[in-house]
Amino acid sequence: MLVMSISNKRPTVPPPSDAEGDLQAEASLIVGAGAVISVDAGALVVDASVIQGAGVVPLFAEGELQAASSVVDGSGQVHIIGEGDLQVDASLVDGTGTYSAATPEWQVLGSWDHAVSGNTASPIDFNGLGGCDELMVIYEDLERSISGITSFQLSVDNGVSFFSTSGNYRFMTDNGSPNNFTAWRATNSNATTDTSGMVHIMGNTGAVPKTARMTHTGLYGTSDFVGSLSAVDAIRVFNSGGGNYIGGRITVLGYK
Amino acid sequence: MAWTLMDTWDHSVSGNTASPLAFTGLAGAQDIMIVVRDVTLSVAGFLGVQVSIDNGANYYNTSGDYVSMNDAGVISNADYFRITSTSIATARAGHKIIHATNVNGIVKPDSQSEGSRRHQFRASLSPIDAVQLIASAGGNFTGGFVYCLGRF
Image 1 (tube, rainbow over the protein chains, first blue to last red):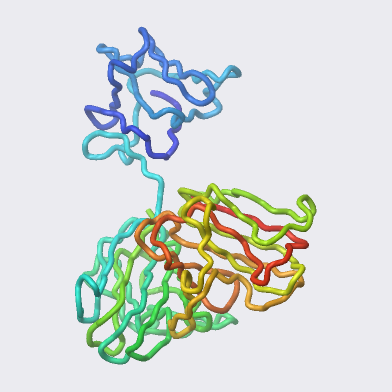
Image 2 (image 1 turned 45 degrees about the vertical axis):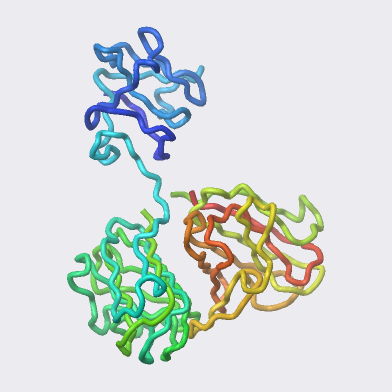
């Protein structure tokens, strides 16, 4: 058993592997009988006990292997203790057995563009948003066929149902007094003309009310969602007046 | 991931410094935050932020490169992300966060300390890798601190 931590940066060259938890290096990377892989602060010495019969050693991208201070001596040497293969947490290994620890990042998880889709009936649902610490909806120049407010409802069952009861969504006054709503709104234009804005949901993965910041700078700028403490995994964008979206673009981002 | 302090400007160290203050080397940041603390100006103006996609070789500074949105979501052209809402020279504080700066193909929205308009950067959909703090009327930064953070 090895005692070390692995930085969660993506390797520049994903190491090959034949099985989950059993990373292997190409023979060209093996140095002598013991194998030495360069790291920032010196040389990583791999104990002979972890070398497999074919001379295979664990492989990491240069500079991306970090050891706990307790296993680094004064000369920068990393001392591997225990015996057996390097064990990689299953969450860091993809279906092909490749180490793939991902640094959380903003990702585009959904979009609607009138230039691509044409007139589209409200609502527009964005599913598959699970696992995100944060979610963001950016909308640009949305036009509606019927006057209404661009609104948002949330789901915790990937869009099978959306919370729509008054009190599921709340907007707070400056003194913290909540006002119950059936949906969020980020801007307050009850019209058909272009509207742009943003919803930013934070703390999504915790079992807590979901807070969000909106474009609106008054009452509708500070909000929470208390319909469920589960993680939001789908967002519905809709026009309170119904009808079609006839212009603009919506982009949904997830931070994961 | 964590917020990382990328650069600092401190008037007690640098003295009076002409606007703008550039912060480069921000490639890869998921979000970028500028914090201003008690910043004073030689000429009354707004504090704002302009962005670059070529590590500071050029900054977007044309009206329409940015839009501001009112509470109705109606846009107006702007030439920078505004931090403060008053054109003034005396000490001001606040912050600006530009979101999803490393995502290619999207407009970049902001949030901020000021209770007025939000913005979007629309002139380019490429990742942002540098920003500059501007005093809208030019002149010098004559006091205070500026911090630039990236979220990696």
